[in-house]
Length: 92
Image (spheres, rainbow, N blue to C red):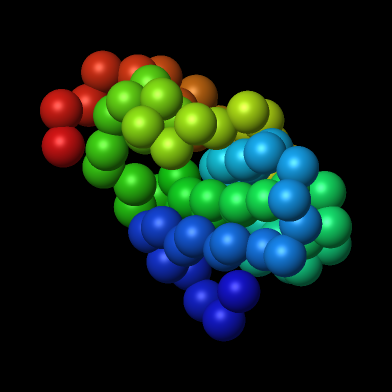
């Protein structure tokens, strides 16, 4: 991935109408390349910097699958759960 970006979109050569949203911390940077042949579009969101409403984003981009990719220490923090919950109502 080359770093921790708020949002990255990859359009692949696969034509199957499946669109993946990966919600990740740094741990998830290695995953997208392994998924190129399984999805037409891959949207990668760094959960520490994303400020949009997740429900709207999923609807607007026709997301069909969501993958949570966090390291164990980060995934077990209440703050991580709180940030994912906040995505459902953010206005930005």
